[in-house]
Length: 117
Ligand code: AMP
Ligand code: ZN
Image 1 (cartoon, rainbow, N blue to C red):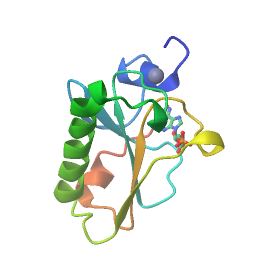
Image 2 (image 1 turned 180 degrees about the vertical axis):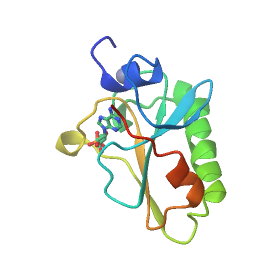
Image 3 (image 1 turned 90 degrees about the vertical axis):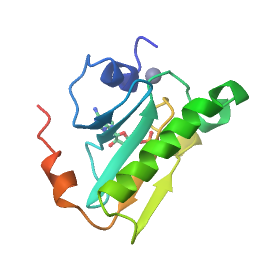
Image 4 (image 1 turned 60 degrees about the vertical axis):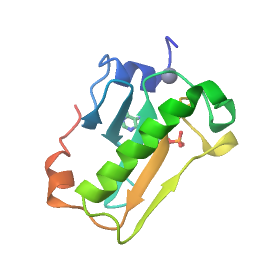
């Protein structure tokens, strides 16, 4: 999608604070964090919303789950975290993503928070 901000982020056309970039899925820090750790996990492929997930996407969704598990473990967020999909008028960016929110911020997570210009 040409005018999708997350498509531009995953193609490196807009700078952001990536946490992890994999072949098919990426994680980056939310520019407007609502918790000490607030990471967005998204596929590179443009899928608009949760309701647009089809059976052909299940491998991709599994990659998003596996990446999220890795972040929770690597950053020691397991004590208090939540993962959220927004939909309808609560969803502001129409490119599938979920929010990983955690009460703590690990040193590793802090280190990867660079200022976006
Ligand atoms: P949602 O309302 O679920 O679509 O959430 C979209 C999220 O994307 C919001 O929490 C925004 O703060 C975040 N966001 C928007 N633009 C950027 C960006 N360029 N880099 C990082 N996060 C962003
Ligand atoms: Zn997109």
